[in-house]
Image 1: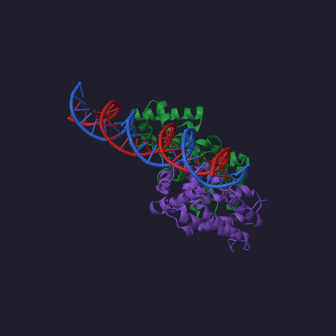
Image 2 (image 1 turned 90 degrees about the vertical axis):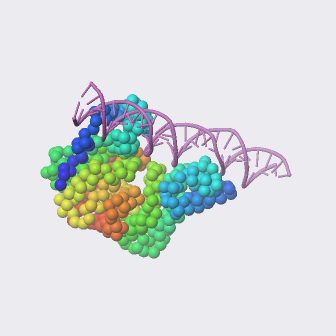
Image 3 (image 1 turned 45 degrees about the vertical axis):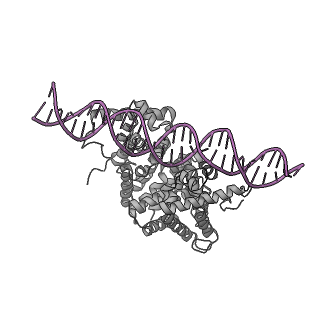
Length: 199
Length: 199
DNA sequence: CAACTAAACGGACCGCGGTCCACTTATGTT
DNA sequence: AACATAAGTGGACCGCGGTCCGTTTAGTTG
């Protein structure tokens, strides 16, 4: 079994020097645009122009706008992953699996609160919404916690169903449009987990 | 309290004759395009052209592509709504609320199986994904069933969380990409409901 | 029937995501 | 150092969703 960590891109076929430089330029440009003018201002043309490269290069590096957003989130994603795999309880190993599940949801909600817009933009594509490696890691993490908690049943699907209410698009809707607080969402998550894992 | 049914559009300010005629033309054209060449072929230009009207008219009638898709689904949506409000058990009133919840999920899954592509296209916009009247009806239906089942807690959020795994985009992913069967999804739904409503 | 007005119409126009391909360049080999 | 080639590059180009606004028309009023 290979490492469950997010694959380090280009480990086997390393990027050429100029390509790597342009990746950095593009990521910096994109991050700057987000900070200055919001996610909507991050058009592929704008990023390319700001980075001083051609539009084609942006697509070559990131495949799509969602891919670019995903790359922007990569750091945060890895941090979360590190935390629940190797970090301290209750998120990391050592704590009761149910508490870990609850902490996991809280951590995700916190991320959505901060990076919600970017997350939503990243979710706007099928491949990155479900087929992304980060998602696969989350699913298998939840599956293993469910198993560890002694839950019986279709772990795979149960994990998918539990992850669904944490999707950025929905959470943002609840926060912004319905005016719910993160605390309330956190409480509801905890309640949901306790119900599902009870008995 | 007003009728919980989907509002009959244009009841107060009736549509002009030509407008109503064009709406029909457009809906027929769109349905035909879906049947003949799939959802992706339903571009706003194509629909307009096929109906023999201008593009602006399509947008005036339906607001956006998602709106058009939503209109295409309206009939099905109303049917489901009728069924769970006035139809026979287990979907309709009379059955145990938990059984009604389970039946509701099964009904939705069946719809996704048949109209999945159109549903997904309709979900591609924020306003129609969450702010659509049909969704509000579903949410309040689930809320009332949870209440009737004697479930304690944050019904509103619990309903949202339960509805999330029924979203077309996710369900289609599970069916197509992960190769799961509708039966399996149905079983998982039933299991989820039983867990959540237990105790 | 003529005049009036609010509604509907249509298509030119815009910006964005995404593709394509002729051209350039970094890197390893002899 | 010269070469070969795989990788990278850039910008013209495309199609689509969505907007805008000058024009047309349906329904009403006297």
